Image: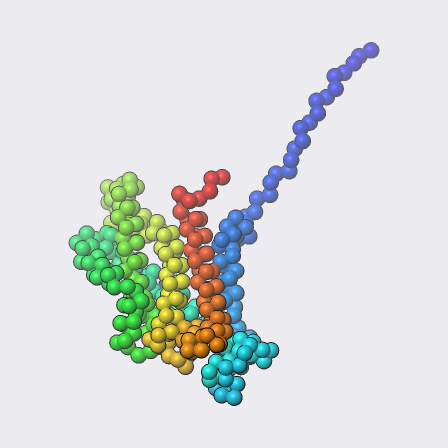
Length: 296
């Protein structure tokens, strides 16, 4: 009788781990960016939908309703002029986000250009950097106040004043990156092959400056929103007739001890927006910096 050996048991084959790709996988792998993006998109939605979500005109004066506590009619209460704080907070998001994004874009573009020129052209480096050092010697908020004192109060002038105060920091960051990149072997190889300066900047230097510049832009956006609120709070920023979070808090500072809700609600919205932008900056820093990337 012929006997056959039992066939060896096949090893358990586990199904391959599902790898998430695309935006969903990116956000799941980077919860910091996901949380920051969700908060920021929520604030953008409130700003865009303010005309439909607001209960009344944010500039309408109703003295008979002045200093009312939060209720079903006025969710966040009213200020000393009877204006609805809920509607003013929603419209204030438009001002803060506009200032933050505009300053981040303008300061990043201007600082990138200045930093590239300073880091590439040695003759212009000393002159440009001494000008930037002079601007950096003045605290940004004081420089913004001084610039606003020379102009009339408007959203556009606030953006310009804060942008001028932020440009030196961006330009020095880009200059440092450019000086580091110029010592890399692939840059020396490109120069030895006859690559001209404009092409060298465009193909080899500029792409490597975008990662740190993107992270810096998020912090500039958050700083610009805080600076705009400070300027409006002290009366040197957006005109009082325009609803902004700084103006709302300025209107309630004299009544803070007995009517704290006037300052509380705009302060919460400002804090959440700044937190969202900072979370995005921290998340992008971890993703774009290879030294902080997680090992596979």
